[in-house]
Length: 139
Image 1: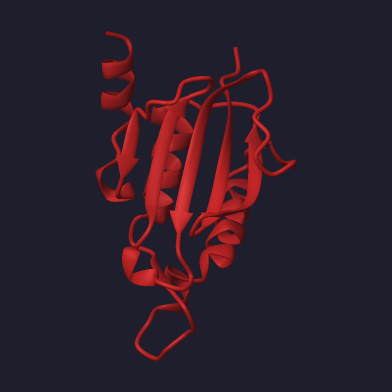
Image 2: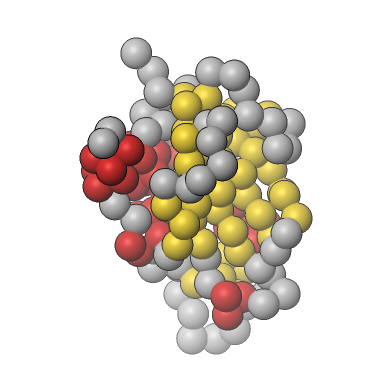
């Protein structure tokens, strides 16, 4: 059975877009994949010398676009839905936060079960551990 999920991408407090994924939406699936992809990338406001262009996001909108491209290139069935919409069949919700005007805040990844307000995880993508999150959730 498919585990559906959505990912909301934010620039500061502004919701940029929402991406629905039909399968592998659980934390040890999509969550770990997003965390791994985000980890090692730097959010900037304007490209400067000294950055590896393959490892930067030039603004939160670039971050959202590159994450969508990553999921497509990995062969996942995704689609854009109305920003902020969480379809009824989605089991997990991810929020990916960046702030183009203050990129020093870094990138923040949030994961929660659809329909619940308390996050299962809220922090740096580097520390995200989908298996541990799922184990905690099952208790």
